[in-house]
Amino acid sequence: MPKKYLTILITGASSGIGKSLVKKCIGNGNKVIGIARRRNELEKLKIELSSDRFEYYNADVADQNAIKKIRDDLEIENNIPDVIVCAAAMFEKDTHPYDAELIKKTIEVNFFGTMNIVENFLDIFVKNGHGHFITLSSITSWRANIKGISYPASKAAIAIAFRGLNLHYQKNNVHFSTIYLGPVETDMWEGRKSFMLTTPEKVAERIMVLINHPKSVSYIPFLSTTIARLLTLIPDELYAKLSSYLVK
Ligand SMILES: NC(=O)c1ccc[n+]([C@@H]2O[C@H](COP(=O)([O-])OP(=O)(O)OC[C@H]3O[C@@H](n4cnc5c(N)ncnc54)[C@H](OP(=O)(O)O)[C@@H]3O)[C@@H](O)[C@H]2O)c1
Image (cartoon, rainbow, N blue to C red; front, side):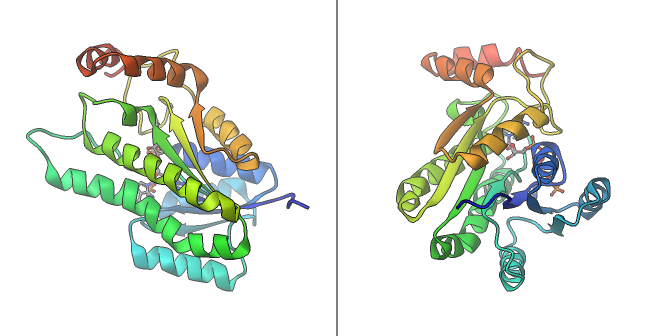
């Protein structure tokens, strides 16, 4: 019989979508392990939730030793998650000329940081015969972007890696889900108010549905992702012009 309540590990738990998802998961009776770098934000969340079903680690997802230590601790405590939502990511606008350091840093956090989580938990999921990884990619990964190359490139890489991993591991009952997200009103979103914008709370609700019904690829929310999918038919230059109306 499937477990009624799950243990869910959420990276990027200190703000935005990750934080909303922590609240939603705790509200639904689940146990949550949050990871992010800002201890003060995690502690504030712990106080706000006032629940012993929420625990946190302050760590950088790209730090291999730190993530391995978290996995070892959870294994010793017999507290291995059923689901891992990889929401941690950074976004900084690329400066021009070409900024090699920013590209490296962004790929290091958004791609290798997420893969670091996968690397540390995949073998236990396979051994246990169940587990679910979810990554939050972006519609920006589909198009050349006038504002930058690092972030969209990192989100394209993680999405295609998860989709490939899903093909390999679904036979082990280990699922990899990729969510292509449209604009969400969080600290990361720097654009204008728009009918296309959704809230982190609404995204958290949709992620809960996905947690209960794993799917390889999802598009959230429907409106902005559908418009973006249709716009993949137009040339980059025209898309850059149109999307500039959304960005400040
Ligand atoms: N907002 C959007 O429009 C949008 C659109 C498409 C996709 N997404 C994706 O949705 C996810 C959540 O983003 P958000 O919008 O909620 O942005 P956010 O509010 O800026 O949240 C980002 C989270 O990632 C954590 N983080 C960043 N670097 C980290 C690192 N090296 N190690 C551990 N944690 C790290 C941050 O916490 P600390 O600073 O405390 O470490 C924060 O909790 C991201 O993957 C983002 O790419 C967002």
